[in-house]
Amino acid sequence: MAHSLVSAGLGVAAVAVALVAGCSSSGDKPSSGSGKAEPAAAAQTAMATATAVADAPAPADGLVPIAQLEYTEMKVVADERSADAKENHFRFVKIWGEVKNKSPYWVERIWGDIRYYDASGKELSLDSIGSAVRKDVGDKAPGEDFSAEVEFIAPGASAPVHHLRNFAALGGASASHKVTLRPARIATKHPEGVIEGMKDEVATVANESLTDASPHEHRVISGTIRNKGSMG
Image 1 (cartoon, rainbow, N blue to C red):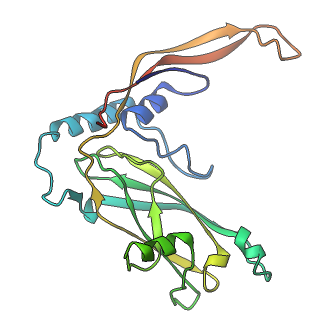
Image 2: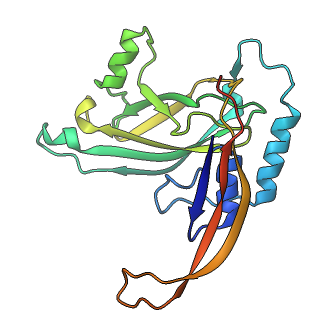
Image 3: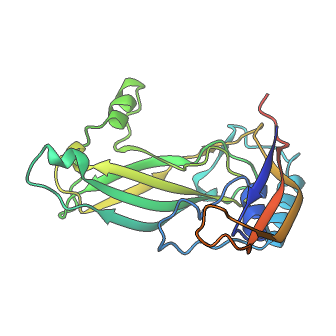
């Protein structure tokens, strides 16, 4: 499947990394995040590494161990807790972070558990849809799911995490939290985006919607995005 790409104001390296690596870690972070686009050479190196291990035997259980996965927390913002219990349904602790696949394999999902604690270090009870689903499927681990926003993650690539928890679901005031990753399943088939025929040009155009319709310059990036992976 191919799609045309036309954009303005983006660097070639930033676009290339997002597509070659299969995901971008900077687009969904808060503005204070420190993510930077990698040079195109770094992306090519990552893909060369992936190609070199494509035929390597995978672990017998089909899982990437936790030691080859990484979570980095970027920012935490908590709303002010209300004395009105109903109001706390709409007030949240918001967490931004990034997970990284350090293994030589594509993975289908990087996820884990998040647990909440009060100021004394006591774990808080949790009554959410996520915790209820865990009980229904027989998962007895405490907490709730905490996962990346990108489903398939290439070797060496990172993906953003954005987690919300409303105060009403917690059995007390949350002062801290803990994230524990689980092994990630290896993706034997996965999508893989590539860019073909990319051009980075400066074009002179006239925007009739502006009061001043005189020609002005726009940076135009064009090309074709194609999925060369397989999901069949």
